[in-house]
Length: 88
Figure 1 (cartoon, rainbow, N blue to C red):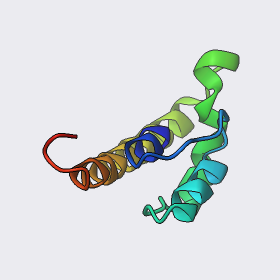
Figure 2: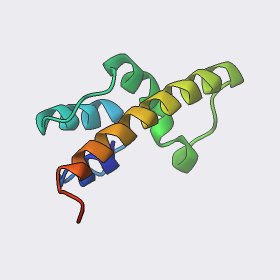
Figure 3: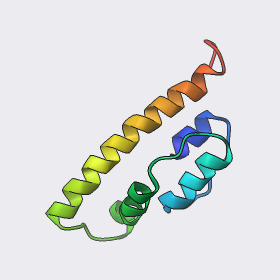
């Protein structure tokens, strides 16, 4: 999400709350990700750095959502970069 904002030339907050980052996407006219998915994944945004891992079942669901969101964000980044033309 931060990469999508950066690709669009926007600043981003230094936070791990995906709901807030999602609101920032919308505020600069970038497509949002599903809000429920962002809310579900927010606790995992800082886990590698700050905490312990989730159960295997929850981790699998989080991974599936994260892969889906990353694929969509890659599209958003590509679209934002394409607006700058071939020079980037």
